[in-house]
Image (cartoon, rainbow, N blue to C red; front, side, top):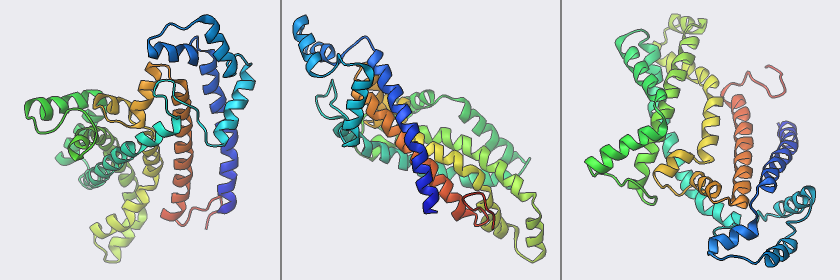
Length: 313
């Protein structure tokens, strides 16, 4: 197990380096530069000689590889640079926004699990009955609707018409409900269909018939054997969903003015705040690498027959 984890981490290092170099190169090739952007934010017209002097002091006239090496050295020491716009460190901005993203992620996952698993099981158990057809139609409808459209409908219904919930902002539970429901609606629609398909596949296995012959009830076999086995095929997809949520659901966070890392990234792109963008890319890379590792390890916990390294029990 330890050998596997170490191997995965070592495998990820070159990927992180390539990704960081690619992101840094895009920033380097941009026609804008930190000095000019800083003066523009201040509403001042800089002197060309002063701009060139500051660029020289900041090392912005150095070749790409020199600038990247300097930046990478600072990153390895925990320094992600300073935001052009906010005037604070990138690390401060990320840590400021992460709690809001974690709260939204937790609420969305909780709603998705509470809805998708029982509804997916119900679809499988009631295969080709009216309940199955109805839930499949709703889930197809939910997958087809863009999240920003669902969000605007919820804002109009519960914020404008009924005036039950605030439309925008982040802070208390009332502000959390609409963005969490928006994300959970789309995710639940996907996972209902996925759980249903996995359940039907497992229900065709011989152990279901064997369990019934031994006197176990169908409900007991479904919840104790069929469901855990069917979740193995869902868990990878679920892990990727967690990664995307932790990276910030950019569209939903922007619509609802939820101050998470996704909205931070959108703002950084619009104002060309390259240090924030680079920090966000690194954050996303770390999240997906960690989630992938946890997903692989969870296979062994959920199914003892699976052994890391390709050996079966």
